[in-house]
Image (cartoon, rainbow, N blue to C red; front, side, top):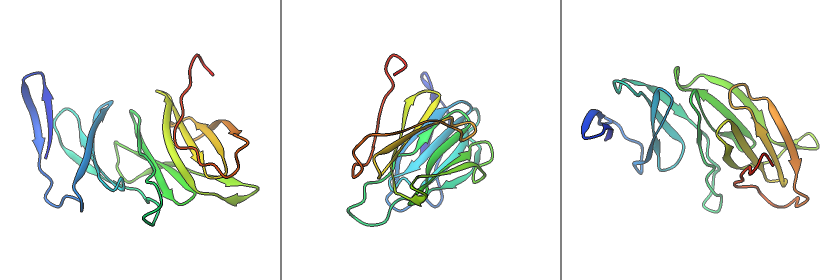
Amino acid sequence: MSRMIDGEAVRWQREMVNPPAGGWAAVRISGGFAIAVSRALSHVCVFRRTDGRHLGDVRFAQPDGKDRRKVSLVLFDEVVCGPAGPSEVAACELATPGVERWRLRCEQDGKPVAVTGLFKPRPDLLGVGCAAGAVMLVDPSNGRVVLSAKTGLPGAGIFEGAITDDV
């Protein structure tokens, strides 16, 4: 069940007919949209914020295996970003769920490496951590890599990060 509450009043609520296995983990709001995210972080239901109309679903591909850490999903006003494969990240439109705006690949020396983490170091940037110890800062609106850096720790995976005082 997803509810939109405005102060004391419930503006709308939706009960999903076929909820994902394991249920829902979170409901988040950004811009004109509300999303419900499955516990597996692989299924996102998108709703219009004002009236609760279900606009559609977005699917992401989480890493396989018990030992693999799930990759976070990151919500912006117009897109939700998540893993599209072991070494790929995609931004999917919220207004037209299921439509990819862009896709990005993590690689080192021309070979794919695993995406280890997605994070929001600033409200207008997506951080992408790679298993090769590299990090990319990406403009979520168009997928353009603003900054790419290596940590010097080639075996380390980047899971999260922050920008403080523009550094």
